[in-house]
Length: 437
Image (cartoon, rainbow, N blue to C red; front, side):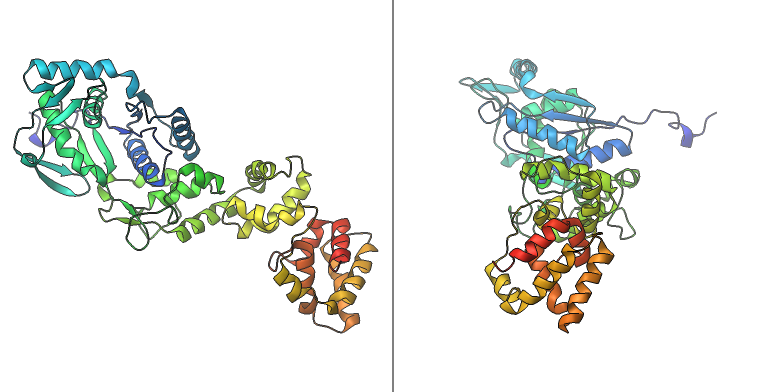
């Protein structure tokens, strides 16, 4: 006879099915992206199904441009879905269940709206993150299920879809906790099996307040335009409320999925730090093969009006100079613009501070020395520079900073002789001559 302990050993495990359900009434913001990521990670960790459901029942506010942006952002982040649904294509289903509740006397009509009778009771759920939560439905008024215009309310459509799509776990932000008792009453009225719930902590600013645009509450597509890498964004999002352990901050997504557990998500609010996001993004940029980094930079160069046809060897050498210090792809555009612009931009402050008349002689000698070079590389440019410093009996620093400003319009950057090399002999000599015009 089989022992009691092994009775269920051959029973199939419950199938994990989760969903991310954005509304196309706006772009995908960082909070929604974190919710999508945690659902995706849970599905992948459990060998389950990740459903993308577009909640577009509000025809006036739902826009195709928002839907397109949501799908692009999901793809950019690498959050591929297994099933796809649009609520606007399921109105007949919602009407069918509304009629069923009317026929059973569980709902009534007020004009054209179908309303569910709320029965007073104590409702308990065990939230996978927060533990037991108790609700008193006596304080909840009767719930509209179908609006007078024939469209379903959020909670009604949500419950029906979750049930029919066999969603096993509803993982969403804690701002949805107030919807939970209303939805439980709808589950009960329809006789549907309830999923397990997990309410994620909200993302706060570093002072513990509500996130603002300044503190990172912007669309995922904005981060893409600002030159962040999807790997950096995803890595940072997974740390907002969850940790892989061992104080690890930079973690590969595949490795994180293997460790991910929704029960280990912190219920306390997660603080958003732009500095930490920048740091992580810097690490991923550093690791990129230079060829891949160039491919990512080319669209930014083209958008800036610099074109997209460059000598690949020259561009590779140039990008390598800046790669170790880039926090975003836009950093390259800001720091290396002098390489693509015909005229260098020098602020009045830097011109006064670094390009005084006492530097004219040094610039004249240096431009003449560089113009005579047959080979224009790090060694030859440095030798020409040292010769001028020796002749004028000045410190190298007295000439380095003024020359850098004249060539790049900036006071900091890579080594001066590497800068000269990538700028090229013609432009270097020309800018030194023009510095005092």
